[in-house]
Image (cartoon, rainbow, N blue to C red; front, side, top):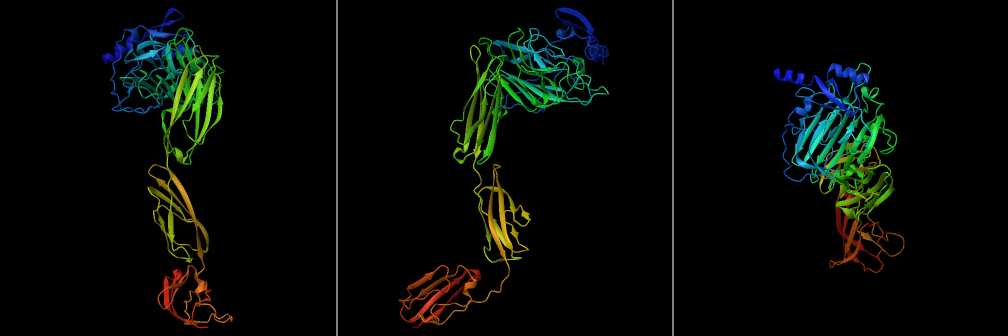
Length: 570
């Protein structure tokens, strides 16, 4: 109880520095502060000094680096390795607050910022981190701005005090810091006339070598569902309008900056970093990677928005993949162009490639069997700054073979109504099956049995799935016929091929009811003298001598073989 009371006394009043003048205001989070904020009496461009500056550096647990190199990832799920940011305004364990900042954070790695090493920072509740000073400023400015040194994935008036609002989480490793604003609300969202809206976004900074980001980058902005832009104290209404939220990086010298955009409305329209304020849902599920280390003529390389560059994309042969990338020029008036190298991939085509202050690429890849395995598509954006700077993004595509589908069924002919038809899959590596028997019935068994209730031709399809997730479909036609009386095949004992039109051929009675019959005839010495793979009662030998001949007749439809002797007499 004493500790909480001391904390409340420490923040009862604060000193606000704005426009180089010093004034005393009630502490953020207090009723008096909220009242002044709603009235518009809190100046823009302030940060809180006094009690915050006297607090010791923030203590935190450095999470161990992964045991092995991990693939880059953007939106990292909050788990047990994350902690809630201990803002100096707000009480533990959740530190719900408005306009608060963390104590100073001593980073366990060197973060390169415009050619200078930053070894500590502040996490500010209002959607940014800062260097040199904490900021409680809730109404964002456009960049460049000489008064703020910050990296802002979404600089807006975040307020986590509502019951339904999420919190701000962080995680520090030896080479990276992740800050995630998860489903956070805006200022005064709890007013009776207002609706609660929530934003989820994340910032990652690294030492430039951590594989959590693509090579050559040390900052990423990642977004989930973005639902609001502006709090009430920034002239917003129901989360929109008023002073736009700002997304970007600001060096604080009034010259060097990166601006991805300003946002003040619902919807998904976007006209570039420096046009009119944009609509916030354009940020939904977006990913931006960039390098803020360069001090090469104060020209940073282009910012890449290519979500596919941070994953290995798996495709099955025959699949189609749309590949998109956007490069934002860091400064107003710059033009960026895009170059693409598919590195030998076939069936790769560029749909559009448009340069500009916002450069865009759209390409299509149809996975081909000749490219089975891992493939790299290299995409590079180059600006026309002085000197020119480039950013590259590699899209890794893993193309997987399609199934070699095969199946059979039995019987194959004379299938009657009610006949039990056995279907057998012979596809190598199949782990899932979906049969469609063409009559409305299906089965997920590997080798099902099915019977038909009506005659007709049925298209049977088998769709299989391999362990890799690749699928394929094969179809065959099966004929169901009416039941017929199967008469026995009767063999003759004599035939007279003398050309008189009477009994000239070796004629088996009822044989033509059956198909695929195999006849072999042998002479008295056992020599094969005649053979037919589909005998039609049409053998009339001209050069055979009279005598006794031996025959075998295989009738597959009856699963029967007839044997016997026949006399040839002229």
